[in-house]
Every structure is written in structure tokens, then in C-alpha cells.
Length: 213
Image 1: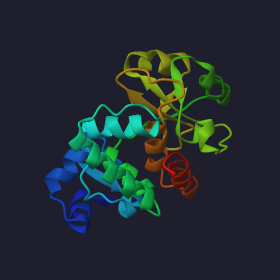
Image 2: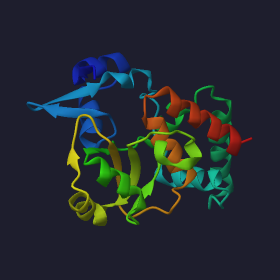
Image 3: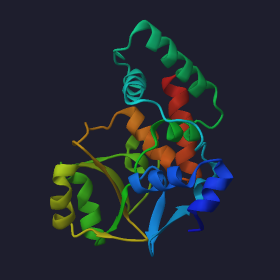
């Protein structure tokens, strides 16, 4: 994939080199470290990186609202949430907005034997998401995107003999705890928004329109 230096990325987006390095190190930017230097994925050019992410409390409230649950906010906070929801409804391409608000860590890029990858979705320790979630309406034969709890990660990698790969068949998001099945709608949207693929981005728009009509 085309890549650029931290300095080039920072200059193009009006950010400091130190901030870009910190975002790369924590996984907020798609990047890899080569010979002590970070290289940034150029497919990120379209992202609204300069926009600040939402605070954790507002992220949780937005997620709850998308799933029709109580947001637990004060009246003042609820007004802010309403503005965010209006912005999401009116955005012609909400994938960038979702990505900027949540700034997800990159999933592990893994590969394994086709038979092991085919068996992985049935394992109770992983929860399908992204293009593998039925709500996304995307068929990706021989591939899997899923979430796993951090405490289950090593065992899953060992049991299914999954190894890091530049041509992955498994994208594995690692969470502090195993998420619910199915994953919350906000998690699905964030996973889809993280992909540069046009199918995934289109499904973000469709799902937002359906749930925020």
C-alpha cells in the first residue's frame, strides 16, 4: 500500500510531528514502524483527521442512542448529543465522521489455513463484525473480521494457528473485554468506517440512514 512519512502527513494535515507519532504509536492512525520510523497509510488522506474525537462519555452515549438505549446524559449533554446526531444524519458520507469521532485502533492483520479461518466464526470467543456482520450485507468468502477479548487473544491465535500477514484473511479487533453478540451498532459502524473500501463506506451510510431516520 502507498505510504508517506510522518513529516509529510503532519504537514498535509496541519498537525505536529509529535502528535502524528503519538497517534501512530497508539494505533489511532494506520501505520507501521520500519527501521525506527513510522510510515503512514496514504489511503488515510480522505479522513477528517483534524477533527477531534468525542470523549469517552459521549462515545458511549452515541452508541447507546444508536441501539435505542438510554444515553445516561444530563440535559446539557443531551443537547450536544443531538447536535452530533444531526451532523451524522446530514453528512453525505458519514464514514469519515464516524472514524474521526471514535479513532479506532487498527485490527490485527492475520492469516491462517483456510479450514481454520472457516471454523473461526463458530468459536464463542470471537464475535463477527465489520464486513463479516450480517447487518453489513457484504459477502467476503474466505475472510473474517471479528472482535476478541484481550484475555482470549493468545489462546485464539494458538488454537487457530493465526500469524501476522501483509495479505490477511482475518482482521481481529482486540477489546478489553469480549463484546456482546452481535456487537453494538456503533462498533459495527466504526469497523466499517475504518476500511477504505467503497462497499464498507456505503454500508455505513445505509445503516446510519436506517437507524437515524
